[in-house]
Length: 295
Image (cartoon, rainbow, N blue to C red; front, side, top):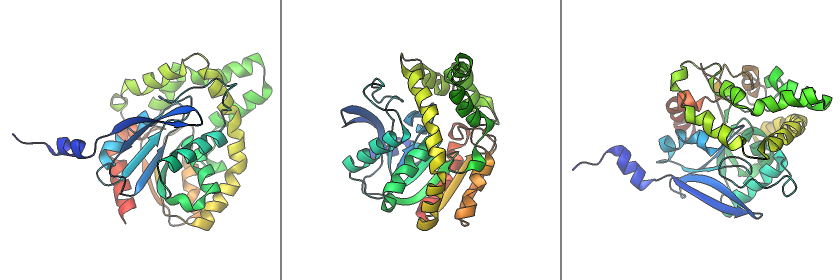
């Protein structure tokens, strides 16, 4: 009887689905690979979870130690009431930082996507020594990348009328979730429906949309930090890889190109797809990551 290479890799490097208690919360995470190998931290965005990396992790787990946590209120981590946990990007970054400490990680490369960008950059800002290399997939830290969609959230939240709040809440419904997954893709038949349906199922939990609204409000404090994060990266001058869905309607392509202003040697690759680039181009992106992290 023969054993397939895929089967051998799965036996040697299975993908584990675990939880870790942090500040009284059960934080769900996916882990794969040999902990003795370089660590790659995968940070998810809105409205997804570590499930977003389900196709990427198997493609990298033979050569890297991979960690992908879910933030509180996302995926399969606990969703405490808003009276028990302050849903801010700062607090998310503190949770992830404690997660890394508990896992014994003192140095890692980071893959930052969407909300993962402000989470990861806040960690790097506090502890620059933790960063090895940086991979950015549709994760914004430049004003050039801010779309009208993002700007409208702040405008409507600040107006604070019933009509303006309803416009923000519409971003937490299935129509918009499907839009984020399907807009700009090359082939919609490559997008697994369970991707956006799982996100929506979890977002439909009682109280979750109020959490999402709070995070949309809090995003303004990320924009205020952009110049500091840019300065930090200029000083650190890490190796940076951009793998970006160029048709993303939320985080625009100019936001990717802006990384070159501060790190001229940034390696850039654009894909003819939308916000969730891994849904169509996980194999291609994994190949770029392998080469990038090994040289």
